[in-house]
Length: 395
Image (cartoon, rainbow, N blue to C red):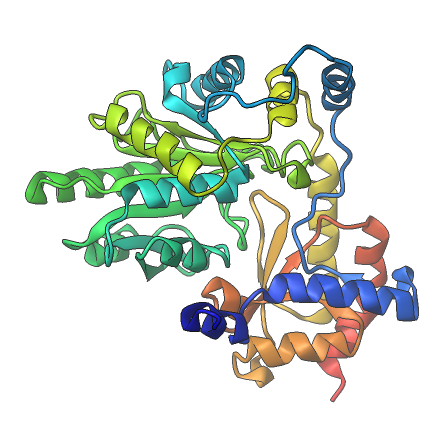
């Protein structure tokens, strides 16, 4: 018999709604033609990988060394871990060494490893909402509970609300900046206020919640810098991947990096390596570990995303829809028209009548909103102008 818990999740209307939209889009494109379907469902980056990545793929593929495709330590190749440590040192402004890094199967694998390493049954992960749809499942995978906390009207962190949510069962706070789905970047003052709150809580209770930073969009920003965390809080850990910045989401290569100053560093690393193994990942894919070690610092041009961001905002202005202007990533968070009474599931189903595919906000703990992924063709954005207008204004 199928697990009742899993069966209930699978049958939930909000389960896998983004993927379902993506699959529907393929069917609609076959029926009406790709130029007449406006698919904004999934965050599948459409920029080609930088040339440095392509060259590294060729170089690694040509390597026929004995056991080239064999196992390596569960934490990853030493040279790849060292490269990720160098990358994190540059981003965080503090020295990081390879023994702080575990290579993982994408950011999703990294988050599952971190959560399994930290959670006891019934413990809580505090998450500002809206947030990435799979966080609920990731936390529940490891017998934890999600505590959603509202953000401010501009979707910046409401630190007072986070402080109020902290309790004896709090294992960690999970943030995502730039945020999926809002595109909000939490600035330095946000992070200082948050880490001060976590320190205060730790001093009072003797338990310092971890600060988990999910950062696959870190490099995709529009003039605003993502704040550092390692210089502000010892119990900080980064989970990230190269899916979005290097446009290789299908290669499933990411990593976990613990703050080198974390008092529990040795225990955390032992747990993360163990969990990488027993969750069945065993190790990050060998081939792309070698590729990333050679190409992680490839120069990327994200100006195309910024251009498309401005174009989709113009389409929303024309249609009369309100939205949160993104500061990074490649998503637009849009408010459903008032007459739909915050029923985002109904409104995104209504959009499908006009061959528009968007993800309903309820799946992101953001009822009454919907998400547009504008990492698609520019022509699709421009061609959607009249379809959006009709969807909003026609009865």
